[in-house]
Image (cartoon, rainbow, N blue to C red; front, side):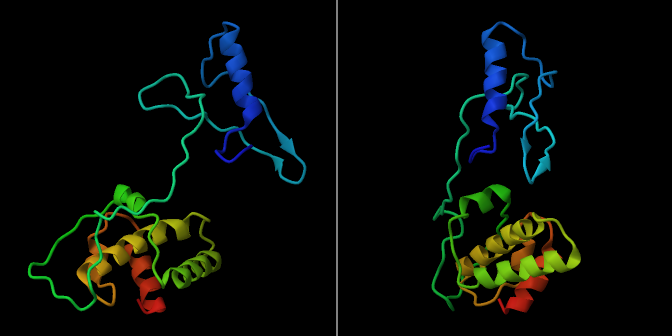
Length: 174
């Protein structure tokens, strides 16, 4: 497997079948199992498909880079009062658009989220999900010019785990 998560021998085998005139019907009977010593047997995964397409996409995958879109919640000076309160609605696409931003308290929040996931037996993706929400709330905090994240700021983000995010922010003092 390489960086984009695809197993090259599997993709090559499917391309060979298509080139030789075989119909590549998915899920098909052609499955290559790769045994890596120490990892055990891995389950089969579906090939990525474009929306609405029956055929899988067998070309190179696009690599997503971290971005910081200045149009999403631009920061203002701390302590500056807003003339009119702004009600924002951030969702997953907005979280992707600010994925390159950094905050000083981010390392502490990552450590707290990892500890909570480990102690509660939560999945490895749980810290990522809660940190996505926290990052959106921190962006709103900076756009409001506030020092701490208020409950209303968490309510402006359309992502799950708001109670857990509020607890982590309180523990971190943000």
